[in-house]
Length: 84
Image 1: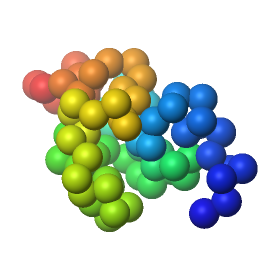
Image 2: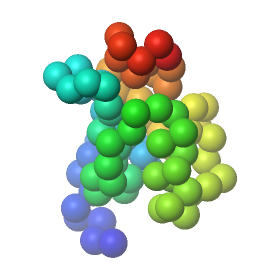
Image 3: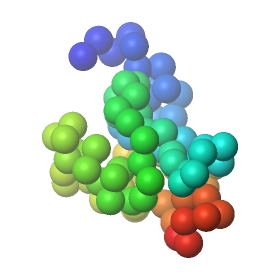
């Protein structure tokens, strides 16, 4: 990986950045970046855990670790329609 491409990673100081819920779609989702690369849309905490696992970060507790930056709400906030 080219570390010059990881500006989002650097600015948050986290390996994983979970963006605020996108409320314009149903169901809402949160964009996920790992080391500055967009890896997909998460609809729940399990999706973030799976992205981390696929990136070789399976030992990271995505709900508690400082390696994860939750932007626009913590790991329990997925949007009004999700019930989470």
